[in-house]
Length: 249
Ligand code: NAP
Image 1 (cartoon, protein in one colour):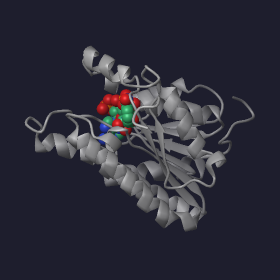
Image 2: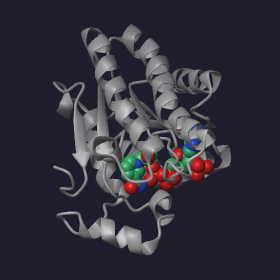
Image 3: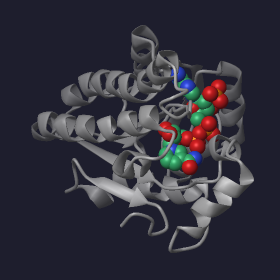
Image 4: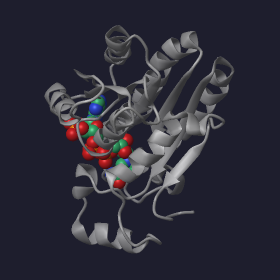
């Protein structure tokens, strides 16, 4: 999109944006006029993803492991130094380490909670610092319907994704008087590398359970994020948008 869009003139930072849902979010924000900082724990992947966004507003990329306090602060500072401001932060980076309680190790639990819950908290805290001072901003945290329903074999992931909802609402209350909105998106089953790792029969069974009878595509999650990033959602904070084809309504 040239000359128009829903987030023209804004600066956005997306974590875990080297591929999948994060890349789709970076793309739609860029298409709608934002300057985008593409970050991922793999700096080379982030750089390639940023190149793939193409022309238009400037983009930048950076390696950022969201579990590192300094790395997250550095990413936020990079956005401000490069583009003068940070208006939109999307905490998207994620991993799974599925196993039943019988087999899940403490390391599996801690790794997942670290990336999702600690990583999101670090992002919210660092962005809030900049946005509070500016008196405006929109933070979007990517949760999961797994955090609403609990998924078999995901005691770690479901706990972390439910925790993100509590974090979102608490931060929304703190930051609302400062003009900063904090919302969450709960995707259902979305076709990415994360879900490609699922056995095909399990994937098919999950799809059959969805009223719309199909998995979602990354750009369908990105649309909800764009809405929350833009002024179209100016009176929404602490909200949770479900993007799941009708699953678990
Ligand atoms: P994906 O394709 O695996 O992409 C996630 C990206 O995050 C990967 O590039 C990954 O890098 C990166 N990442 C992992 N750990 C990181 C860290 N510590 N710091 C920075 N980046 C890190 O997954 P996706 O499906 O797009 O998922 C994106 C988000 O949506 C996640 O929060 C996920 O939980 C959530 N979600 C996904 C679904 C779904 O069905 N796909 C459903 C609900 C919610 P590596 O590849 O190197 O690990």
